[in-house]
Amino acid sequence: MDNQLHNGDFLIADPSILGDLSFHRAIVLICAIEDKAPMGFIFNKTYDFCLNEMVPEVTINLPLFYGGPVDTDQLFFVYNATQPIVEDSRLIKEQLYLGGNIEQAFEAVENKRLHSENCRFFLGYSGWSKGQLEQEVELESWLIQKSTRYKQLFSSNPEDLWRNVMLKKGGKYTIWANAPDNPTYN
Image (cartoon, rainbow, N blue to C red; front, side):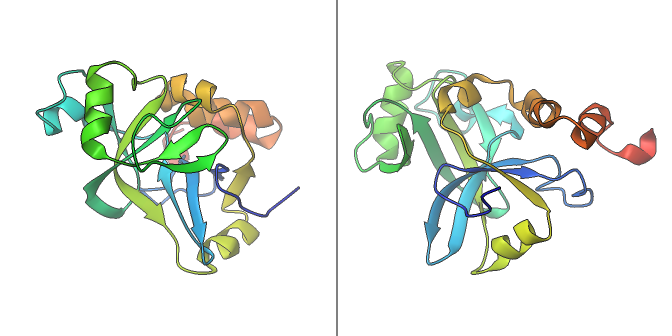
């Protein structure tokens, strides 16, 4: 298995990550690997409030995701499109873009060019210091998932995403997929 991380890869939290509130059963999209200090966004954890409750310019009800424990007062977005929709977006990998002009993003949401099936807005991000993530992967805290099926991931129910990935992996992961969030409750 290739343990080398690339932009557009997903980190799947190993079931052994139990006490970490941020990363327990998390799926993290890696968006930038610069100087070996990766950053990404937790793709499957939503807040109890939506984007339109935080941003008055947005009238459409889009979920707001917890991107990670760093800069939780900052708004970020990632979208899937055949070409850039928003100026200054950065290509992550194959039709997957990070950020850009936030006002244009809000306008694209209102015009329905960005919607829940191709875009996610995040408060905060996940980041690691140089060498930290590689060490966590080596300790098997994370599984690396190579993917180019981004459209399917955007349209998946975020609450079921981790469980579905575990079921597809099979074997010992099937047991964890069907276990309660806290196995001591079982």
